[in-house]
Length: 584
Image (cartoon, rainbow, N blue to C red; front, side, top):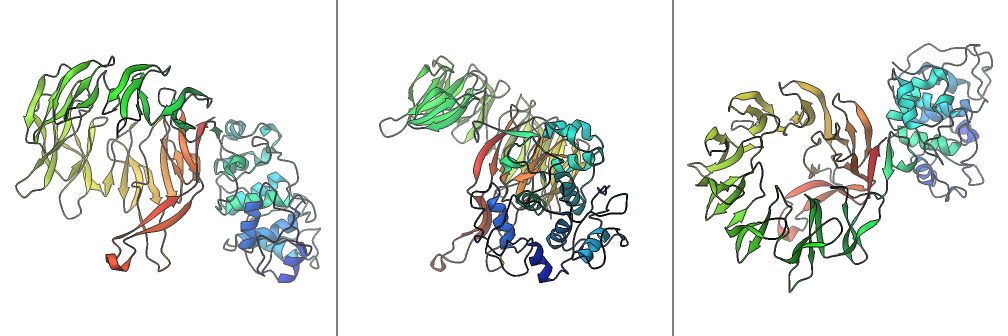
């Protein structure tokens, strides 16, 4: 339900220039965003400037904005009508004992009430000259956005605010909903809502920027059930993260302290207690392996630095590939043309133009076959590709004996996860479905794209939008997610260049995209972190790397006439800041 307590909703651009200028909140005339003399050092300067550029706020005749001045309820009604011009009238007008027809904002207040932004007080007063509190301002904006009130605010609010107990009872559900939608801006202390303090012009501007989905408010001040953590923008694996320092790459702990000094030309994440790192060599890097203390366990004399898997790591020597153990001793002689990491006790290897699988002693378990490509084993099965009679690759699956259990027949296929494998069928639409481990069709081919199952759900694309299905094929999280799309100055749409609009579930959450922004949902489809970041990585070990800010544009491939017509237009993201977050 909508939040209709003491205050209400928004809309209508029927106000005259005279009283807009009179209250110095809005301007029909163009206002210079850089013309305010008192906002350059204000914490919300960028948002104020953006609102001014869009002619939603203006300053005073002396070129000040006065960001720390308060806003009255009448002024806020006028501001909201201009900020949300499309809200519909929902109720009859009401008469208030303290607003005569001659009052300068009488018409604006009546319209704001009809649009369900305000309802006044029980004594039939509106109190137009009373400063609007932070709670009231948030309720008005929540009404404008038709934000659904939550039923368990006492559980939610303490996650966001240390002063949650001070929130009036009538407002708790709405404030909790607004916080979940990332509407609430707190400065200077993120966890202090100060619900009963009067709103300043700068605070009202910040609230409007969030409501209008402007990206100009620093996320450092937007209340959320997550914390930015230091160090930011790095992915931790086995509690250490690779970070570039003044002399190369090193490793930091979760406090940001270098526990292994930055000194390597290249460095990979830790795997099974060891990390592959490289130093400068005679024309090419030389790889070795260090432990968590930074001690050399395997000296830097190798041409390859792949992660360890099941106690073995690939090496490359004299044009051939083999494996070493964690002491650096050769476990399987380099005699193959190519090798993959071990998975479920077997490793795919290439000999000539054929592929087979060996065990940890280097013995053949599946002799080399005429496969065009292979993947590692997952849940006892491996995907293989075979070129058919007309030269197309068809994919199927083999078991650990090499027996084909799912005939090669698909255009594309993913590995088995949680008992099912996503496969793409031939046909007019080339749709995706899922097969089970007996090779039977478990979920009919009906999706434009399909991902592997993870934590009981799989992302699928339906009518160019993404949602999630359960193992029975039921759409349990609606297809409400979609990638950003931007256009060239000639109106040509750029195609997304990063792939799906959803990622697999991890740590109970899934990263999803809604246009320009990404957030995280739980297994019910509810946003745990709303889409406020331009890009995110999945949660791992309780942390997620996110990108804050950045500019979207359309990249044109082959933009020069002498190279021929453009071969493609792709939406891409440039800039922004990588940071790390954790849930509270």
